[in-house]
Image (cartoon, rainbow, N blue to C red; front, side, top):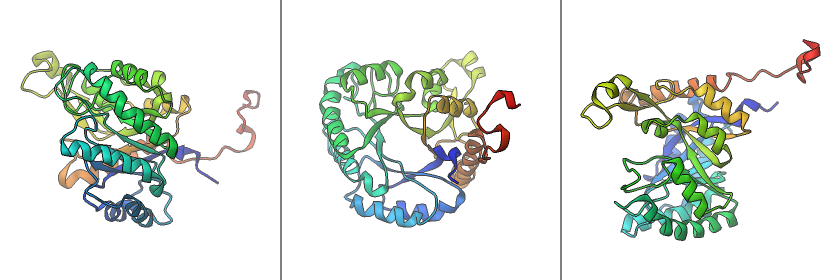
Length: 310
């Protein structure tokens, strides 16, 4: 019997720019992860993406692990060399996603550097309208991560998709149904936005979820504010932060959402370096529990949910 619990899978991200993605999958595939998101930072470094996909699938073997999403994180709207490499990486990942078994490519929108957010919209429309058509031809969805990368409405280097007001503007420019979000609660909490109501409004545009959390230090805010020398928020691995992941997953299920929640590590100030995988495996098990734990099939008189039988 298939496991309906795994309509929402819990996995992790795998760095792919250095060519070691398949090796890393082999190293951690037996830790219990149910999905992987191989991701590139700005460039693929000239890799044969189709061949990389084959090696990643070979590393997974017959395990029940999927790769629904590839990641590309850079700025495809500008025209410096690395920006152009990022744009090409998007094209290559869209064209070759099927070699991983993936149906989604995710990353930053890009941004006209150090200019107000609205000034990026004409270039956004130019680049992403073309990429949207390319993706549609390949049966691939595009998902934008909601990370500001230290930018804001007035200035930034990487991404305009960090704020729900920006999402409205973006989706007006590119109304294509296969363009959406790679959403996570952490980046909303960092900017003191309540993430839960977003699921109810935007679930239809959420194509992939990152498993990352945040701890807000309200005592620091009260004493020092958010622009002082003391950090008022930390990015955390799920299970160590403030998000109610049981509610998050419940809201996703209520919206009919299915897909992968892939843990984005390397940010937790405590569970990092030699504790990195300790934190990630804890996050994996925590999110599996928030999902409802192990699947127990309904049977007997309770199956079907007829209240007259209770």
